[in-house]
Length: 301
Image 1 (tube, rainbow, N blue to C red):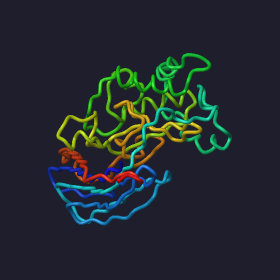
Image 2: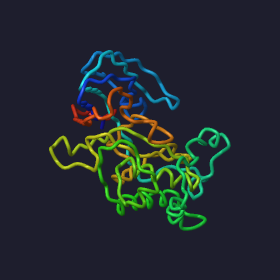
Image 3: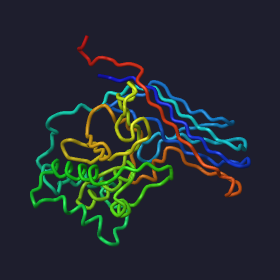
Image 4: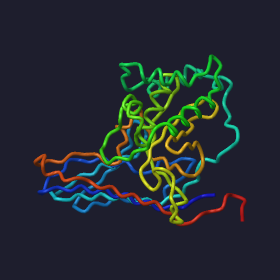
């Protein structure tokens, strides 16, 4: 089944007095690929602006917005209409023999391509991240998929999901200590733990589509909003998604926008403003995703 969806993402900044704005980076446009395609998109602002597009070092789509006038309120709205094919859930995920047990064996070519995603990004001064990661490895011949599932399950079941408006991501050590976090904190903890076990992992930002919301029902954690998860590179399977917030690895829920070595590279909207520090009053983010229709699979009537 192919879902045709409409996404609207609005960010509003409020100030006590008019301020001026530096260039802003907007990362919201889903990456093209086998899991979906974009049919239409736009970037709108409440004040005069110009937009140019670029592709960053990891091939993410980035809109660069320049503003031409000061304002007490800045509103940036992204709109996307797209088709989402999803990733079918299958009983067995095909792995090469060298990926079936921990540690996974990468070829020299894979090492060159994946090295930036294998190197831990955060410090582990007290060794808590490494120790936490190690306790998931049962032995010298631990099954890879079972180990990954155990880690994802433990994050989901032992940590408390706690949404927050503040920008930024907790360090993995903070998340372990606080035993709580957001979707991006969950993903970042799992990434940095797996990197210490020799896995290539990358941070993924995007949106969580949940069909339950179309019927007015309670959806999954983080649904109808910006979302974060991770991908692990497994020889034979390639980049495989793991969402510890909702314990999903496949299906039609995850709409990928961008990938990164670390969360700071893929903030949905970032930029600068100039004025008195006390002028800043706050920000609001509103995201809506709704289904417009479905298309049958090839061969269906």
